[in-house]
Amino acid sequence: EAGVAQSPRYKIIEKRQSVAFWCNPISGHATLYWYQQILGQGPKLLIQFQNNGVVDDSQLPKDRFSAERLKGVDSTLKIQPAKLEDSAVYLCASRSLQAMNTEAFFGQGTRLTVV
Amino acid sequence: KQEVTQIPAALSVPEGENLVLNCSFTDSAIYNLQWFRQDPGKGLTSLLLIQSSQREQTSGRLNASLDKSSGRSTLYIAASQPGDSATYLCAVKSRPYNFNKFYFGSGTKLNVKP
Image 1 (cartoon, rainbow over the protein chains, first blue to last red):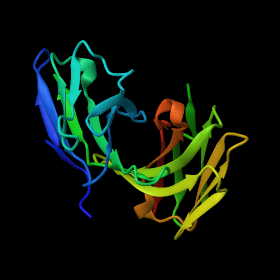
Image 2 (image 1 turned 135 degrees about the vertical axis):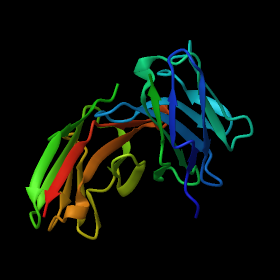
Image 3 (image 1 turned 60 degrees about the horizontal axis):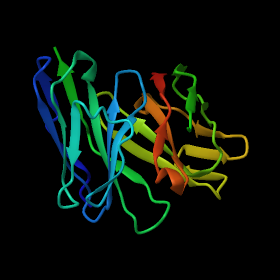
């Protein structure tokens, strides 16, 4: 089966600019996650969707970050305006709900550098 | 809130050695625990998934164990190879009241020297 697709792979922007990342999960996966991974740290959950509804966005900096999954399939994560500390790899993952204890599958990530 | 810790943060071993990576978590009410591998600049590749009712899982040279009551998991790598060099992350999935959140450790960076 095709994996989780993310684009772009790399992005360099200046601080205060805006940026958007795109994720296409594995077909049929109802749960979609966006994680932020700062260099040397483990991934931190930003937002979790179940179909097109948000089930957890407690760690999303809502003053600058937004995410949507309008049709319950693809998702976009936006940062506006970006700060230097947003430099990180942004990982998208998806999981099936067909069984309670299924694996999560991750995309390659988008490496963001804010200068 | 679940806290996941991985020790050591970095490990360098000669090729052929058997090694153990450790993962500990503070809340034993988990659904499952998953070990991932991350190569530089890449996403996460799932290695092993252990359900809360299981004690271990094996895949090739990898063996992962889970002791839920003590909040620990280990990843055992037999006969290590230079190709095993990567960062290894463990992630714990919590019970439904957290809506199946994944909590990650900071990872162990492994270097296997030829």
